[in-house]
Length: 115
Length: 112
Image (cartoon, rainbow over all chains, first blue to last red; front, side, top):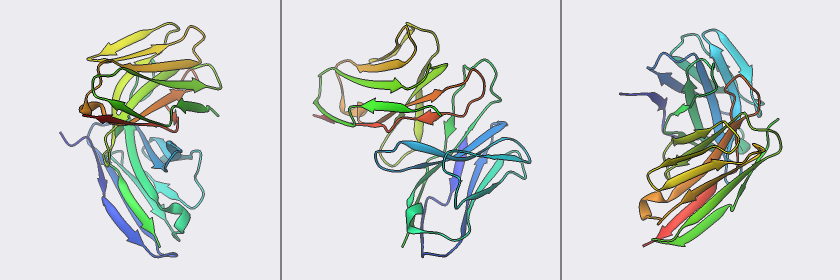
């Protein structure tokens, strides 16, 4: 059971470079999310999607773009990486929210360093 | 937006000791989630609480949501090295949707 798969697991970028993080889920979930985790700050929501073809901004969207062309994939792009974007990035997915008795399924994270 | 404060930020306990982690919200909680993250890995769902006064247990971990639904506690009985990790509380501050916000996390170390 793959669940939520993130690629790559590690990446080092130079300031100004671009890259795309890929998230894939095989649970037919409607909702997908990108979070970043920084020491002492927990997880902060970057962008999310409530279905194929839709995306929305989260708490810290600046410097990132996302796309959800296929239901199972959610891509996070950095057009011009900055050192402040050094972080651990987590993708998550969930069923369409209804009763509130929901939970997120997380990928194992991507460690990104921007020099 | 929902703001969650966790305390303590870090905790070191001797194996076999009990411990409590707290999560306090600035707004009424419609759903409070506890997750555990092992170092270098993703988050694993532990429990979800919705009703005021609700209490749930899983193995040696018990989570409670207070009557006012603005504070939750996570209690571990007879801690073991396998309990080590980062514990995060997450909350959905609205009655619908699943846009969780998370607290800053509590880093737990258990000394054998």
